Amino acid sequence: MSATLDAPRTALRPARKRGVNWEKWGWIYMRVSGVVLVVLIFGHLFMNLIVGDGVSAIDFAFVGGKWADPFWQWWDVVMLWLALIHGGNGMRTLVNDYARGPRIRAALKLSILAAVAILILLGTLVVFTFEPCPVGQPADLLPSFCTA
Amino acid sequence: MWSWVLHRITGVAIFFFLLVHILDTALVRVSPEAYNAVIGTYQTPIMGLGEVALVGAIVFHAFNGLRIILIDFWSKGTRYQKVMFYVVIALWVLTMLAFTPRHLINVFSH
Ligand code: HEM
Image (cartoon, rainbow over the protein chains, first blue to last red):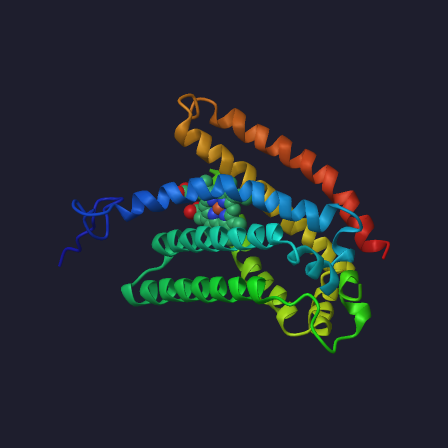
């Protein structure tokens, strides 16, 4: 009738001894992406919230003006990939720490993976298929270079 | 310990905002009207205050993330972890002092 308790911090399953150490690469990724993200996110916030009239200047024409330039397209796409994978991997850590039961853990991790994969795909497509001067749209909503 | 709690909470909050933010930005692919309608809600006073909170969360997570990296890789990192936490707080206060008035003026004067 005696319940057995594992020693504190006993791993759910023993650490893998052979093959790629994915947890180590995840750990390294969190740090490398973090350093790059500081630059990308602070630059993003500076351009969109500080320069000029900040948030009140953002509209379709503002985005069109930025993404007409491949520099900002790549800036935003790199930020998209790095941040979603960093955040998704961070959320996986939280599931590992707090979620009990193999089914719930698997379901939560699958949801995180699906959200990250779908949004990376969607975001990348949006940035690279974006049309700053769509035909048949009112000119006052478009970037000024559309009528030039 | 509190730096870790705050790092977790801010990380999760930013993650959920990012999910929404990619979806709202994706509306540029639908039509200028659709995008402008949604981004207009970001320019209201209540959302303006929310943006201050969001930027505060990101700035803390960013500075404290750099502190974590220094603790891990700098040979004196663990010895100075507490000092570095106070540096993180100080830099956070300075950044928010620079950001908040300017942002609120943009939000409330348009
Ligand atoms: C601004 C630059 C950023 C830096 C320097 C940074 C740095 C870090 C570091 C060093 C960790 C700890 C990883 C570990 O302990 O193994 C971490 C965790 C995490 N980050 Fe970031 N990060 C940044 C941006 C972001 C963004 C944009 C998101 C959301 C999309 C995010 C979400 C998370 C989450 C959810 C965790 C897990 C928290 C935990 O395990 O306690 N971070 N970050």
